[in-house]
Image 1 (tube, rainbow, N blue to C red):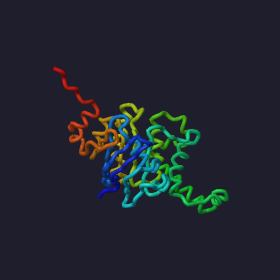
Image 2 (cartoon, helix red, strand yellow):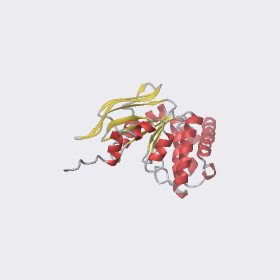
Image 3 (tube, helix red, strand yellow):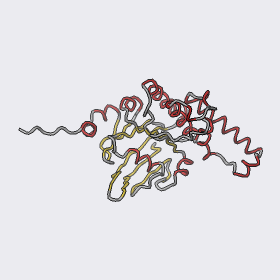
Image 4 (tube, helix red, strand yellow):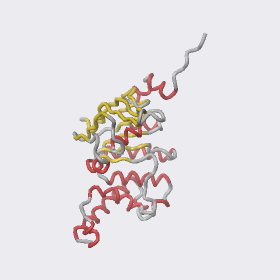
Length: 258
């Protein structure tokens, strides 16, 4: 069953068409990828899915609800989380505080309860802390929970962002180039983490990534776009052997002039 359906999506800025009549689905419980050359429109698609951009036309259905023009926080509440290509941590806050910020959409204590430190607020805070520590443990950095985020190595800062996304309790997690800046060993660990998120937590994955080795190792279905349009869809082998995909990445050879 499709958890996410993108139907005839268009996005334009002035006269520039960034996304053109794009349709694809992501099956519940799958690991899917959206790939394409630089400037193909991948992050713009993510921004439409998560409410940061409003599509010019088309429809986005998530968990059987139309979310096409919902605000980002409403989409997060509905069960869609994302990470960003560039880190967006609260650098002066601790690792645990960063992850706890991700659970804001799931908490109910109001400002009065927070100020007065009511029993219900304290109980909720304890629950949030426990869950966020589990998220940090899942990504392998629980021992860093009390450190200021900016003092962590880059690879561990990435893990803080992943844990924060998990803290929103998503049905689907959108990874925007999670391997950017990681070394070889960290990328191998990322591959295993992505699989564990799906297999152990039951979270569907949609991935944007330039590292084709990583994409081919984890993806069950791949959608390829170029200039905002879908040019191919299939499994890793089908996509690798698709002539349109080869031309999009490598360029089309010019015919030799006799």
